[in-house]
Amino acid sequence: MLEKIKGEQTDQLFRAILELKDLDECYAFFDDLCTIGEVQSLAQRLDVAVMLKKKHTYDKIQSETGASTATISRIRRCVDYGTGGYNLIVDRLNEKQESQSEDN
Image 1 (cartoon, rainbow, N blue to C red):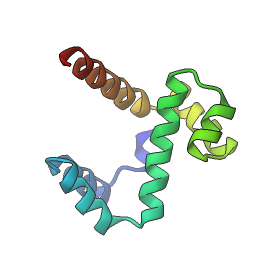
Image 2: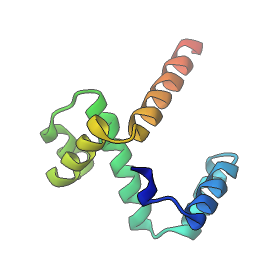
Image 3: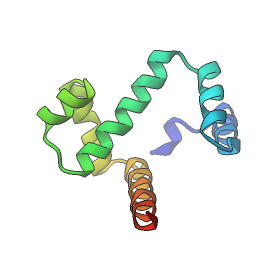
Image 4: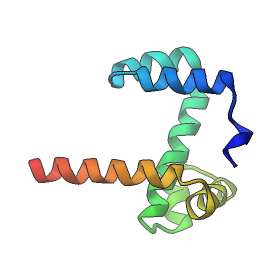
């Protein structure tokens, strides 16, 4: 399934992202790489995935993120039946957030 995006250019992009050290570097790189709309769209999709994993309703997700029901449905399919990318990162973000809450 991942073959649809694999390639030398994509490998280079992902290697570059893995080299970013902090949020400031991410902002600088993605500001150069993407339009504001593209970054906002990616951020919105991740936010939708987070909310889906928390079992929020489509109505709540739509009102809080501005995502269309079509976008929410597409992300739902990825969360439920995709390659596991959303689940991997959302779980890691949740673990990190819980760990930081315990430290405070």
